[in-house]
Image (cartoon, rainbow, N blue to C red; front, top):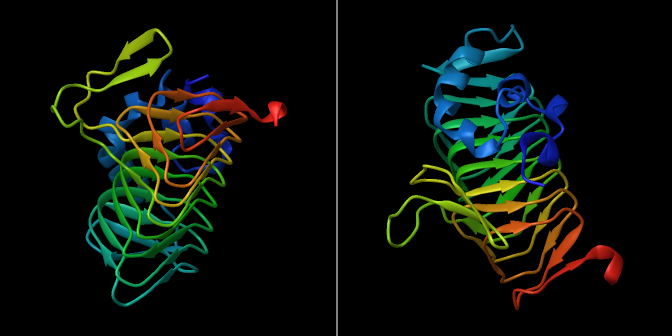
Length: 220
């Protein structure tokens, strides 16, 4: 329930071929910067290199107060709105929204991802048509600074990573003001209630309630 193919339709990202080379999606985090640099040099005439190693599709809309740090790729029909802060190593797909005061760092956003209001997304991968509600964030470093472990019930998967936010599957809805703790993995078509504190693996087609209860959608 937490492999690359469990979580993502790889046809909906320029990173699809790259991600297909890994079993677990978090294994791809270390190579995002190099991936973007390699992809950027191969992009066609529909992309413009607006500054060194920053490629923006000609149909994308980047508002004047947005900051695009290198390297990054902004896909077709995507909006990067006022005061967005892309720190770098961000691969943003087609028809995405990077909203006001949103910060991205070392991320892959599949096509049609929305991070529209006051979100922090770092060291994370967001799947096709996933949505971060206003104020929801990924926490990417543990408070004790130890390496992140993915918890799935009694199973513990060592990642070897100090920085690891969340792996969010296709069509996931994250409610407003939720915190996704380091090493969170959310399966496809799942929902997170607003103001939730999420950790570990949330199975696909589940609902994470803000008291920490997780139920299958068919149990509603």
